[in-house]
Length: 278
Image 1 (cartoon, rainbow, N blue to C red):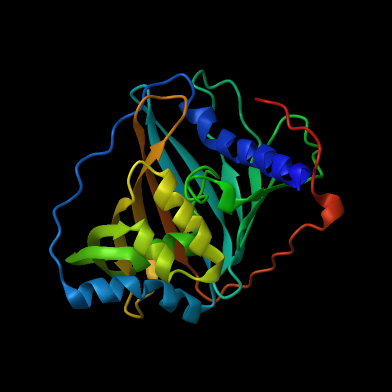
Image 2 (spheres, helix red, strand yellow; image 1 turned 90 degrees about the vertical axis):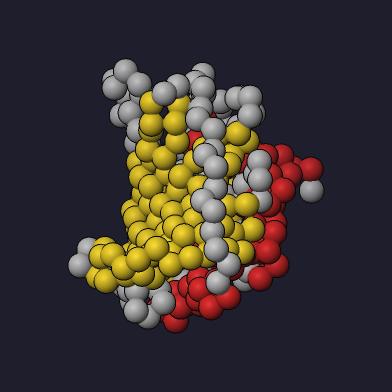
């Protein structure tokens, strides 16, 4: 048991490193005031059901973007891949920004997403290139909404199950698809209560670990009620900084029904040794 807990802590440290590589040594912007929303029962329910519409769509391709402010400079971590909403598994290739001097190009981080777990390759000094690092996302204080460098697409949708306020902003277009734009605030505690088994514990951890359980969002739904784009603004507590850090996480979903072939690593492919600090 002690060895397993130690391995989880090591993995969590590697995951946190994805965000800390951008935050270390810099001051960060504070979260802005939340938009004043109107309560609309039908609108709120529509937003809450968006995750169910994704399950009905089975799968999609995804692009992710996580932006934060460090020392007056905005840095962005980008990801791209596919996701199976029924099995709650997916894979992403995550690209870290260059070092401030622009001299170091980081290798893409390969991530496999699964209920309660995050597998990463090419992350962590001293980890063999053919090995994966496994992180129990239920042990992360943000439920892996932030520290993995990309928000799990289905977890992003399930945050909306906690929608408390929502208002219709207007009609827009994303990649040629007409969408309806809604803006509101979700409560992570409520989202955890209504989430699937795969995300309930992680969202509950985020509700306790973030600076606030209230999450402002913008979501864009197509005519089938499916999420085409969702942006969350998290208030992340970084141990290396005083106060909270403003993190904006955006997920774009497209090509619904795309084939998804995700094979989780076997035990012998998971690195269990010491991970050096970067």
